[in-house]
Length: 454
Image 1: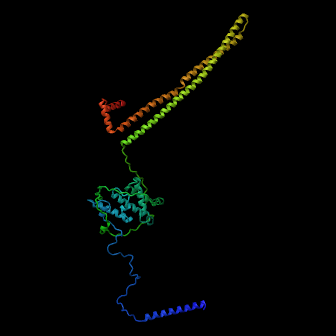
Image 2: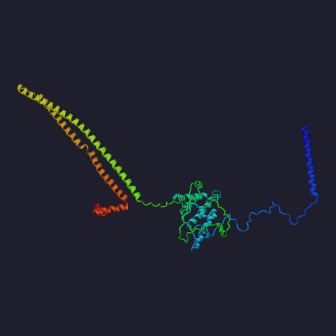
């Protein structure tokens, strides 16, 4: 039997089995049922449309614990760490502001500023937060703020950390700056505001004892006053408010005002700080004294070197001039001697020799002039040698005076540093010893100051 024959035989058997099964099912459905019939309305199908819950229907009874709730004024006061004593109107303002913030952001004010809470919760801070989130809903769409408002938290936390990075605390001016900042609506600023701030440390905020509006501190009692599960009967279910997007009819944007830096407290100097400053001043004066001394030594060496050089030069020049004078004098003597001989011969020979005498006379006058010029040069060089070192001598005198002044300043710093290091006890002992020796230090210092003023 071939393969095709076997396959056709198998198919015919399968068709016979299926027809037999269909016949059995049809006969079973035609037979009367042995079970009793059920009376009443047939049950509804699970897929019936009427059985489904309508979209607009609300569940009956108490809402689940996960539903959004609204707190009363007293509950909000407890969360803020206050209790109302007399002013009910102020409590209503606080409650209205806090509930408005919750309706706009789906978060309570203390949850929005977790980690950088203000030092005191005032009505100004809550109303400013309400104003801020109204601006956010007017300027930004739901897709931009994503109902978590993380970029608003980051901006407020950054403002608080600019003042104190270890313990940031929110202030009303930070919220006002945020209102001006987000009201601008600039895309570049919006991208910057969405950047996450990392590495921020949370800190515990402190609450004042009593506020001027009638609120008291309710922290530190030792009892958990903020259990939300025990007071669910005070809550009212609310619907999520509709978010408004920015429209062209929005009011004009207000310019961002300049921030004013808080004044920083100056730390008082201690005895250690004064001692360190005196040591620094003493070291500075000692260094200045060494520099002035080195300059004085260098100038003294320079003066000595210059004096030796000038003396050698002047001696050489004077020696040359002296030798020239001697040569001139020897020549003059020779001329005079020749002149005497000529005069004697003229007398003897009774001849006129005026031209020869005139020649010799002119030579004698020339040599006299040269001798006088050489003497003047010698005197001028000697005078110049005496007055040439005037500038260096003046500088030397000035440096000597400066050395004395710096020595006095160094001595003054040393004395003041020693007195500061003595302290109150050491100063008392020193004054006692001086008074025992008959020396009144205070009176002596006052007399010296009076003389200086006069």
